[in-house]
Image 1 (cartoon, rainbow over the protein chains, first blue to last red):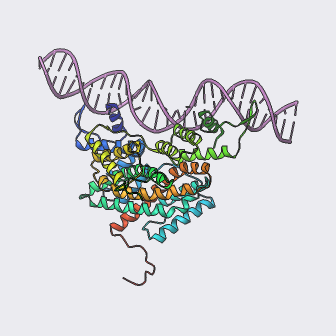
Image 2: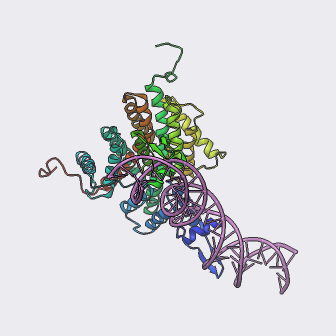
Length: 210
Length: 210
DNA sequence: CCGCTTCCGATAGTTAGACTATCCACTCGG
DNA sequence: CCGAGTGGATAGTCTAACTATCGGAAGCGG
């Protein structure tokens, strides 16, 4: 990684300044390196912008004990930015559908969460392109999201100290997404082959027919 | 949407040229509009670059009956671009782990699929940042990816004509990802609240205690 | 302690991607 | 017939993310 880039990150506030030992020397420690790796992960793996990464590390420094706040910052840095018209009846209907989902599942989510609007955005834009199937499959997506989230939150809480938990909130958001996404691709391949009736998977003992 | 932008997309080959009626007039039909919406969805919702969108629509035009090929193009346009060193023993071990997962699940995936490497990339980079939990949770991710993929492939195959199926491969890849991602965020909120032992969800009849 | 290298911080320049603006010849609608 | 609008071509703008250079002050080997 080129030095000028690191200097740039320092300027942009993505990395904390080193401890100055003289007018033109400064010490950088292990946590500087670690921070740098975190930033690169956010940018390379999470596709976050430099400005977004700055917000995330700032949030990591601030509300040191509030995982929910941090989670929001991390996710909104990662989420792609698209805003359909939110005044249309279609969008209102989509939002209502999401609220219904939340209620029927008993999800502990504040009804004013902006994340609800994000789901409605996706449903609406998809609907306007004729992907009505999104709505039909909404429950399946919610099932998977719920089971993944349960595992992930459990994993975060299993970390011993709060600082390490905070970091895993950020890293888990990014890497969890990337990992799921890549596995989904593999699973698509498998399911396409299976449902299209290509050759069956190798059996325990392929010699015995049927 | 400004006209100059549409002209730009035409130049870049994201939209097919209209049927020329005169030296300086051309007709555009419904499928042009639809194509434009598809491109915008790829860019806005999927976060795909203009060049990536061109590749996807080109793939949509070519191999008209090969969903697997198209799926690969669509996913690789969406996937963020990060390449850790693939020669390290860590990466080799990660890849072996992924292959084991594929075998033990009987997934019908070609062992040379580049998507396998993507999973290994994520595991390796995560591991180098100390997110060992990714490996531990790999099976949970695979479970969810499998069940989502089964639903999605089924949905695509339910479409009546091949052209419409091809389109849903692309749109489903993009919107499915966005929808799952947004729902995961909501589910994180819920699970954090639940596992941290915040107030319980409202019961059917909250009056009756216990 | 001399000189070469490296480093800090600051300023300025570069590159790629995604638009956006202008021009010109033409043509359609009133 | 005339003014608004269109298609195609060319050139310009704007932002994000780097990258290069500069001046001065350490550090370090001999």
